[in-house]
Amino acid sequence: MSMNPKLRIEQPKTLTEIVVERLRQGIIDGDFAFGENISEDKLAAAFGVSRTPVRDALSALQFTGLVVVKPKRGSFVFTPTGEEVGEICDYRLMLEREALRLSMAGNRKLFLAKLDDAIARMRERMLAGDEIGYVRIDTEFHKLFFDHCGNSLVQNAFDLVEARIATIRTALNARFKQRREASFDQHVAIVEGLRAGDWEKVHEVLGKHITSIRADTIDELSRAE
Image (cartoon, rainbow, N blue to C red; front, side, top):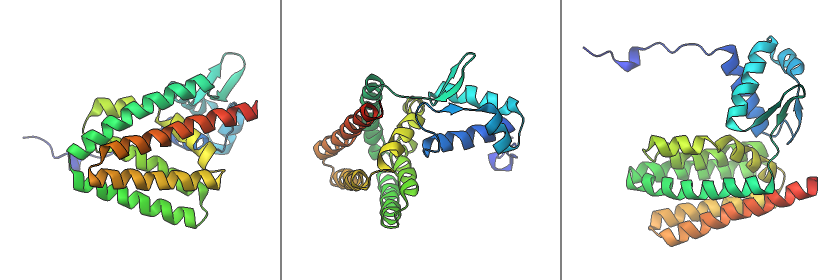
């Protein structure tokens, strides 16, 4: 007799897992700047924990590419180079195109309903002037492609860069209203193309959407330098 998975008791999260989640979201939300030093002592004091879970969390985030740990110097928020941004965008475009195809081949009705819901909430946050709320839903919108694709390998491939993409997205869209508005229109156009079965339009708009992020990010990095 197999055990009903609903009966299983969820294990409480460890301190390290909690610190990972909070620090990850803080970096994505722009609470830390690119290249900023992350003090273990200050984080430990802020979270009310010892340095050990903070150090373990930083090591975990290093694996995702969000944090760079430099021996004898400390831990720093990643700073993408123009070349790295280009590679991430090429990788992302390849994955998102395939994830969209797989998601539409699955439960098309449910997938489109989820995208419509995300669009509605993005519009609401944009009208309310909630920049961080908007980009969080923007990130959720793109993650839906992978949540509904039905292929764990494609999902895992996206997980490798998701946090860095979200951080770059915040750095651009949370600061500039014009970019948010252009981004929103592109999201709407992608859903319209999917609903109409117009894959040429979907690929064209998605390509422009990701290419503009590449160009804008490289421009912002050059300004910072």
